[in-house]
Image (cartoon, rainbow, N blue to C red; front, side):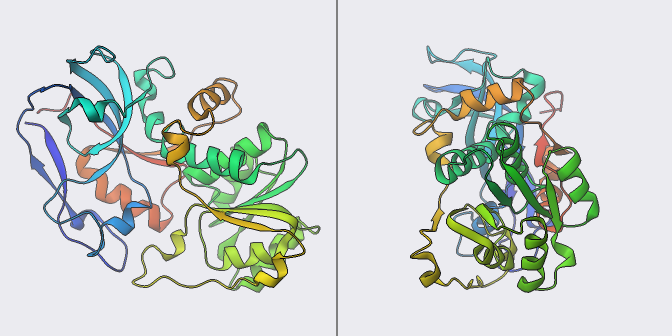
Length: 343
């Protein structure tokens, strides 16, 4: 029988783990008017933390819903055939039927990657990749030679932002990560020019000092994944006509109440600075830009590299999810589902 990952209990404060989820068996699906799919990989992402709160949209006893990539097993649709690879947002059920209206929203991965690369469908060719792409290409609009600071630089989004900024747009790239090992990876594997170990900074003042040490003339762009003192330090170092793109504030996700950040809007008037929040969907759904085509090209050219922290089996989701908030991952956290498992 196919397995389904279910939310066992909500969590308003603290770090989630395996105790908050459970596995249940589901009946074998009927195809209906759409397709039957097998999930090959599912994603653990920081945004899901909000959704398992008591006031979130994930409810105890119901299947977890998130970004997945997989393969068509059977199809009643002319534009999808058995063996096609896809990406989508679906319940975390290993084998399931998907109605025709939902299948129309699938992202076609066939021709872009092989089945061995299917995890790219929830990573560099999925939500993290489209977040990096949209935030950098369309929101920040980098120019050659400009300086960008990226928080969460060892993570799935931050590392991709830095690689694109360096290899595609020829920017000076500064990262922020937790610990010397991660900072070394950010520089040596992801190609950043500098990386600040934020764990050595006790305050915003310390972080500003570290940032000005590597960028004495300031920064032109800041890509926000973390929030808190990172945002405040970025605003203090932002040059005239500087741009900030905000897609996440992971430093707040496990708190019961969000923390405010200081921002002196009067400083933004004559400097013509901009701060813009955004989410990935316009690029992920193909409404803006050429995300899939561009990112697949940059992958093939080696301008963007993939680094993953891999967990095996649907029952490992809780551990994978926890790793996001304990600094236990480099790059994208993915959960691979073996097609050879007994169903």
